[in-house]
Length: 356
Image (cartoon, rainbow, N blue to C red; front, side):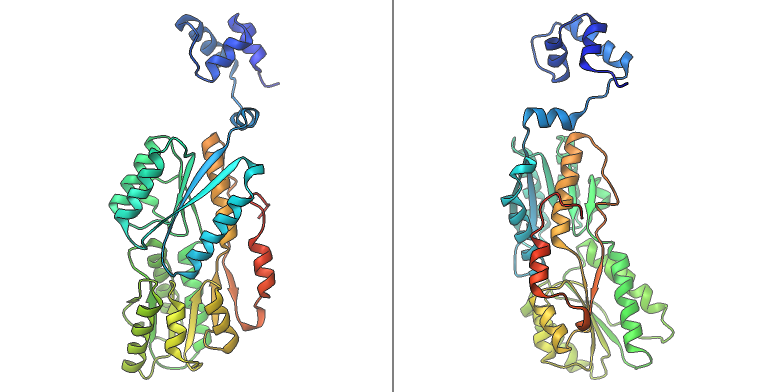
């Protein structure tokens, strides 16, 4: 049988109120008495149920999500999921807020992390990471202040963050490369890669996986230097238009970031180039339906928000994370298996702590 506060009080020869003061680190207990209670706790092997204690106290968990600003449809969808979850999180004693920073701006992201950590009203931080020393340093400062931090969508493992919530991006890139190689078969011609920025880990990981899979294909194929469109549709459109003009024998394009609206516009309804992209948005859905895009690799933004909230709550309570529940899967969509738009809306409206 697990020891209780009653056992502690009896062993230390003090009242339950005194045990409660020591457990909650409140004043009004003499040093010698506190030492007796702490000795009883150690002798009995008492382990406090932090989650139950917080529930009894009615603790609310204010969680700050920091995401890139701009036109990236996936990030705007992620922000919408956070705000949706925030409107329905009172029952879980969780309060979610959103801070936006300029995309790929490491200094702005680090400042936002510092500001969130400095607030007395922050129980955890989830941030879409930029791979930069100042961001890693800000995450380290937050954790030193006792604020758990999870990276979201794009990781920064060297920062010592508490957890990463997102897909395995190397595996996603390998999947895209395998699809590209199989779709093209023996057709000749080079393949181009459109990224947002190589400053974010998820884009670099996807490229690594893609190149490895393409190199393993039976048909050797040139992969052109990466084009960085900054996840901006206008920039992406210019880059792809220039690519098409300069590479008449282009066989395929792997779009591993956002900016797909510009990609689709530059292709102008062409279906002779194999295109693999990420995230099921209005632009990629329409392009799948018309044959401009051949396949889309998707991650569930709603699941990621719910997972980040669960992890931050567990970390705040000192509880273990259930790894299987927090694994984010990679979905592959082609024209033939597109879910109805209404089904996507229903799935993204799931509650904060549904069992996904």
